[in-house]
Length: 335
Image 1: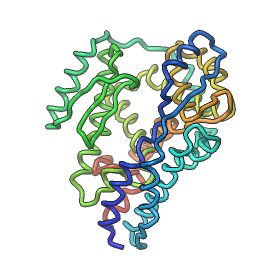
Image 2: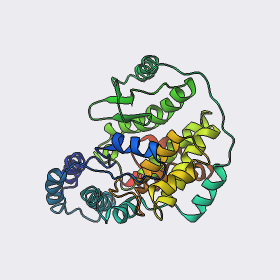
Image 3: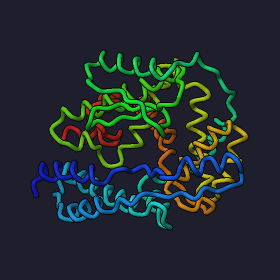
Image 4: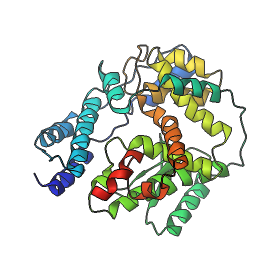
C-alpha cells in the first residue's frame, strides 16, 4: 500500500480520534461538592463520542504499511491510534486505566522518588499579575514576531494555555490572572516549543511530522520543560507542579480521589491540589476507586531524557523538524 496515502489517511484518523484528554461534563458541579467536603469522591460523567471512533477504527484496519523505515513508523503509529481509540471508548469504564498505561505508561519508581524530593522545594513568588487582556496582547505580539497568524482566544476550563494547529488558535484561561513570569513561561512552553515544532512539521514531506511520530509526546513535553529551564522559568513552584503531577498519578493508581487530594494539601493550596488530583483522576467515573489517567507524568519523565540527549551531543535543532521523539533523530536520513 502506498505510504504517502497511508500517511494522509492517518491525518483523517487523527481528527476522528480526538479528544485524547477526557473532560467530565459535570466537572464544575463535582468540584463544588469536593470543595465543601474534602473527603468527597467526585462522580464524573462523560459525553458519548463513539460514533466518530467507529469509522476511524474501520479505516485503521485497512492500512497495511511495508517494512521500510517509514513503513515501520506508520505501523507503530497505527498501533498507537488503536490504543488511543480504545482509551477514548473506555472513558468512565473499568478498562480505562489499563489503556492509559498502555499508551502513556506510568511513572517509574525512580521518577516517583525524584518527584517526592522536588515537592520539598520552597515556594518562590514570581512577578505581578496581569489581566487576561494584557496576556492576550503579549501572546499575540510574540506570535506576530514569528510571523504566525494565530488568534489568541479566551476559554473556560483551560489550565494555562493550549493550541489548535489546524485552526491556528491559541487558547488561554479566561478567568486566570497571569503573572509576568507565567506569561513568559507559557510563551516558551506553548509557542517556542509546541507551536514551532508543529509549524515546522507542516513544511515536511509527510503528515506524520505534524500529527506526531509514534509516542513522540514524552519528547514533546520534556523538551518544553527543558526549554523553560534553559530560559530561566523553571522556578521551584513550576517544578513542584510537575512533580505534583507525578505523585498524583502514582497515588491515584492505588487510591481514591479524596486520598490523593488530602495528601497533596500538604504541599499545595486547595485549588492546586484539586487541579492536580482531577487531572490524574479524569477518565474515571467513580473516583473513589483506584485508577488514573497517566499522561501527566510525561512532563517530568521526558525532561531528564532531553537533558541526557543534549549532554550526549544530540542536536536539539533536529527536534524542531516536526513532532518527533529523540529516538527518531537517527532515522531522519532514511525518510
